[in-house]
Length: 377
Image (tube, rainbow, N blue to C red):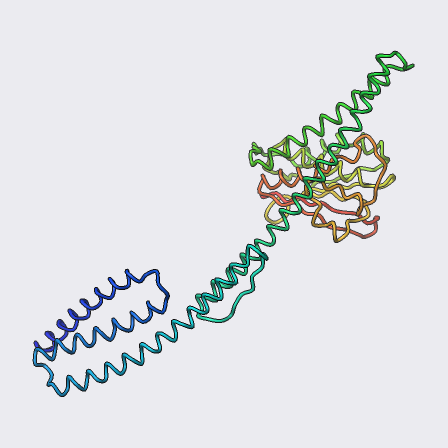
């Protein structure tokens, strides 16, 4: 490259830098204005850099006056056309962004947003993200409404479940005080049973409050799955016998799981008691444990008659009892409960980073449900 060419390059670069710095200053001033100003400024800075470079080079006598005039006319015409195109494009982008803004403003009022396929890819991506956010917001509203409904049901049912035994306790204590009973020991046993039932209910409420508050602490240990299932079956067997329900189970040999002993025992007890409660007399409940890909699976199958599609999504909701969808049974030693057991199961399993789900099952045995707990290895 010759010396003249080097000098021309340096002069053109200096002019472009100077115009660019001025353009950056103006861009800072109009940074909060419409995008039309930004696009127009880009065109002006580009054309201004060329014009400034041409003028400076012509002053150094590298080009003739005639050539300078020709170049100036070409640059001005090209600049005007480019500016018009930039302004038109800026107006279009402004309208597209305004449409997105107006649609987004309806999220608070209606909670819905439909993606707009117009405009550049960035605006389309923003519109699609807003649509996904609208879907998540709608799901959150549905969950919140369902949770609020569950809380109202919980307050109503717990109030009923507490009022009934409390009224019975008052009647029995008054009868004992007035010495109007022939068998005081039977009344004492009944009072003890009612107190124990209320204590279990309060324990469940306390456990659920810890789960919802996120303060449930687990102390994982390596457990033999067979021993855990055997203990759970042994503990539930008296209740099953009282309801004429057969309990059975099998666990693959040598299967171990890393979990909190008390928490996992609570999960198994709640699932088995729930199965017994909803299985009619002469029915059966089967517990199964095995090693699967990715972890350990525990399942409890009952003969409740199945859960309706409308109720399937509510199985693990707070205060859900399923008395409408599932086969009702008479109250027994455990009653119907307050609808807390499955909600506690879900909370404990999720604290172990596991998954719990339910499905309807048919086959040779009477139809029922299978609750499956998958814990990571």
